[in-house]
Amino acid sequence: MNITLKINGNDHTVDVDPRTTLLDVLRNELDLTGTKKGCDHGQCGACTLLVNDRRINSCLTLAVMHQGASITTIEGLGSSDKLNDMQAAFVEHDGYQCGYCTPGQICSATGMLKEAEAGWPSVLTDDLSSETSARQLSKAEVAERMSGNLCRCSAYPNMHNAILKVAGKESA
Image (cartoon, rainbow, N blue to C red; front, side):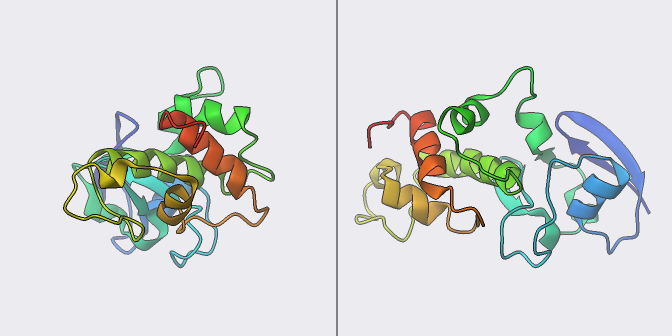
């Protein structure tokens, strides 16, 4: 079936089997290979991207479900010539080692900061009645909110420092 997806601000019309995941369309049909296929079961977070500014695992969703949505991949956040704030912080803080999980980590971190800014609570939120409680990001809070994104190299402390820098809490 023909579908049109808005990816990184551009419309892409593709002919796909309705059972094809968004991840496979990005990588195989549109040559957007920044989004990685890790476990293909939604357990590692390597395929994380943003749909309408919310982070999702693209291996767990069908492409046909996202017509009319705004999809942002790592390629849409910045480029090698012009890194966005999160990408630059990951470089500055050495928030990657092998780099395989990095696109998913950066997309997830970008979405996570928007969730925290909107006041979404996490498991570590002490006071659910306070609108600002979810915005009190600490290293533990960042680790909890990013727990769906795995790194086999264990660069978590550096990633968390990069995220805290972008959140304006570098000294946390």
